[in-house]
Length: 370
Image (tube, rainbow, N blue to C red; front, side, top):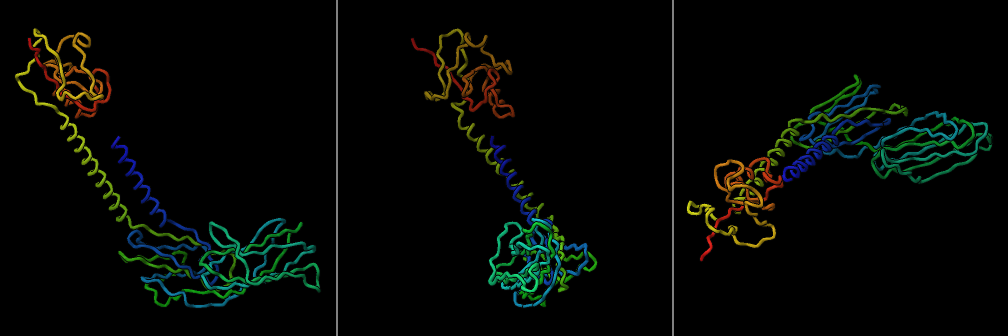
């Protein structure tokens, strides 16, 4: 029982380290033009940072020993045509830092125009619709079949943002989306490491044992088709091996400690040392009492040899007399030495009834007077 508990604790710790390792696992990131995204890594657990860009769009990776300042402002604009099916959603993703502003303007081209939903959604996992600062939607007087609209947003949190266009018409539509973005960027002039993905892959090592900050930046090329990159934190395996080894040592010492305590408890239960002056005399009328005389409920009563067994010799060694009994079953079929060997062995069960042995008690005999 004790071993299973400690094994469960060790398993929990192992899972915890696995989760920690998973935190620094591979991540597929979606970026956009003029992105400046900050990530943090501990060099105790991470040896290298690696970025893979199969499209070779020219993303840059910067490394810092201290957190850089979010102090630069860059303005850029882009346009995109979207063909949106009936009751379908389309859009594109951007990474925007706190303090950035984004203005959307769109024109819908359709023979029949009933309605359109254009929203900005925040989050990579938990999606939240961002409320615009300004929002207008009207029909162009010169061409009633076309519609336009505008919306402006203030970014209050560093996160991934998705410009979503939902077509609620009974036919597919073509929409022209124009963006004007004032993006807040990190200052990369004091970077200690730098590499580019123009060849598809870049990496650099982290100096041990400091925390490091990593900046991902993309150029301003107006490409809104999506920047799909794979970011990898290559683990410092020596750290994980050392931690798991330490856990194994602690668990082993704990098991030894509790094992020693269990042995000490068994030893403390030994009552009255065996003497050579207390032989079993079958020719005399005797009564059997137990070493402590305590009337503990867990102490069974040793039955007479006529009721349980034939003879008074240990059923294990067939040499020494039976001079002990087993708690809790109460069987007295062995000598004290054999009973201790069973108790200290792997199979701690009574040789008669196979119940688990808690304690071994010696017994002695008292001759009746008169």
